[in-house]
Length: 190
Image 1 (cartoon, rainbow, N blue to C red):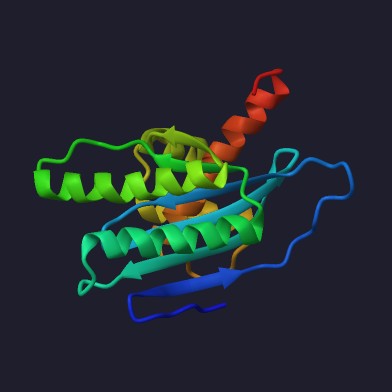
Image 2: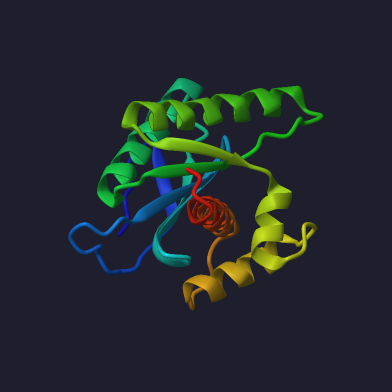
């Protein structure tokens, strides 16, 4: 599936068909978002038990010619569409870190705000997770590089193609959040 417009262009999209839950079966559908002011990675996985299944991933490149409010509006529209199409129940973002470049940190904060607002308006629960937690959850090593994380994402989800790094980061965030949630459910938590 490819979606394009004058304002933004997903630079990579991939969908895989997967099973639908049977009547009465509860399915956890997690969106992972790797927010960026130029490129935002989006990954959707489902969990039935403790096994993640790939539903969708893309990277959305926001045009430099669009002002920041326009970028936020476009990201909001795309996320709202994806949340509705895949029935997302949980959205995870990497916990923000403080950047030495104040302007970059502010721009990232605005994009994160657009994602969080979309979640709130869509009734999707949010979870923040640290980059170290994501890496540790997927590779067993908290200082793993992006390529190690991408390799593990590909293996866990059975994706043969090379996934763009922003999309693999988003899928990794979704998988890690799903593992965390499923672990809490198994312990009687929320």
